[in-house]
Image (cartoon, rainbow, N blue to C red):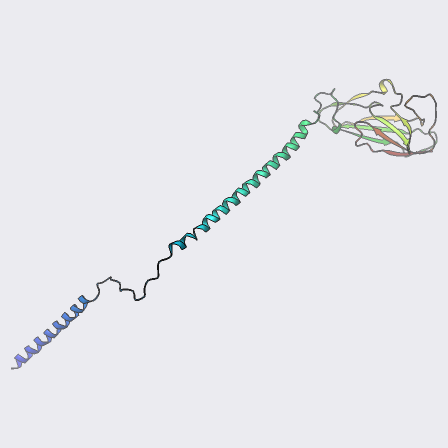
Length: 237
């Protein structure tokens, strides 16, 4: 009797376990398959309007156009700058090519810009009867030895008192004193002295002998090379 109850208890327990396991399997089989998604409880948002997507595409193309325009503008500026440089170079280069050619030989005349001439007096105040001495100094600054006429006509010294023309080395001058061509080497000065006897001179070579009166006088250089020669003031007593 005891054995029978024990066996029934064991068999009953096993059958209940089997039923529970079967129920678990059935509930699992009725549920959703693994990996399946649940249907959404909120309706999906409406799809975007196809016409709305056309507007954003205009912006990149517009930027590209702007970039293209700015790039073209920069290119135009660079071109104008190059043209300006070319004009400047043409101006600078063309001026030198169109000017006077420099001397090639010692016998060729010096260019005006290559010769510096200065004028000076030995005194600023001369006593009675003392003759003034005027000095011209010519220097060739060019590399090539060249020729300058330092004669009394080409390098005319003129003495004035106010508006009155008193004396000129070019008046009635003849012979070697009128023309004196000298070859000037670079940096070596050529000096010419003129002693004035304090007498007036005239272009018509009149024979009258008139002394200059006491007073203040100015001596100047009239020549192709007179750019650097400053006028000198002196007094006769």
